[in-house]
Length: 403
Image 1: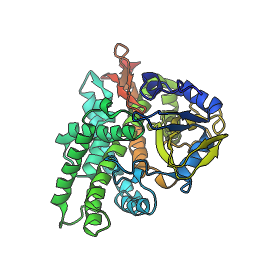
Image 2 (image 1 turned 30 degrees about the horizontal axis):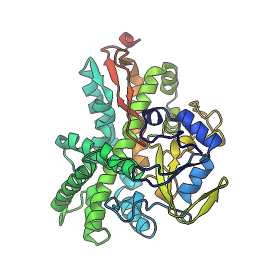
Image 3 (image 1 turned 90 degrees about the vertical axis):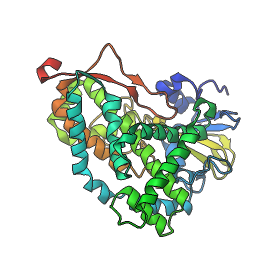
């Protein structure tokens, strides 16, 4: 079998993978890439909805411990199996629980209104930096006690974490120089913040809960720190792509925007359909815990598996007319944009809260914004991530001037 179908380093695969996904699902449901990683490790790619769900949910035949014996073997939720994962997930759920997210709604709306007011002060603004990056970083950074003047550092550190995932998936680390040094810098900074909190009353935020878990012995120092920057990366990356892409779609499709404005009960379906169509995280990684045969292909134990969420979420075997946005889709919530099983993203509730608050605030005033035709939106080329890197919008003083 030719390995030419996928090139992990190609811009085409990162920016417009949909035709490749279709071919994978239809022709190569288990796609073998001999020596597909930068260091010569074989890769296997799963793309059909049923197979992706199998890999995400089956804890006996698939392992989440991707890196085991090298410097990338970090004590993170995404790189651990039970019982370590169970213990770390308990601490995560305590720090990042549904009650805390519900309590944030008023604060989040205040931040959204502040950022929206700042947009109004410009005639033209780059939306990804000014809003879709700024909001999640302010929220998650605030929950970790990171001051606003470290915004640029937070973006760099978050990117470093995402680069670490790409390297684990087979990307040549020379393509992302300095990523590990940035991770170490972030870890040291989080340790400083945690040290300032020790022995003091818990403020009820994420960092306070993590420090409390560390002081009780439930988390090691490294686990506390890596969990903190995992929250930054997860909260920033997924939500940034959802917010920027969602607003871009509404600015292009004014009929869709009008439908959502007229019926706010459809906002939730819009968020889920956008996540399904344009999964901010396009793939996750697993290793086979045992040898298994799938679609007549034998996959050895310990093999590195690319579990392609973006392909599964457009599988016609699961979703009718999968390339269309359908607000009345009966299985709208069955996508894998946040993963599945025991590794389901713990930040999903927060991401949805930020999206719901954003669209509720923007839809009534959307006519004050329009895409800048002279500076078309650009997609990111970060491996495994799908979303906008840049989107310039014009800001109009009155609604009728945008029409």
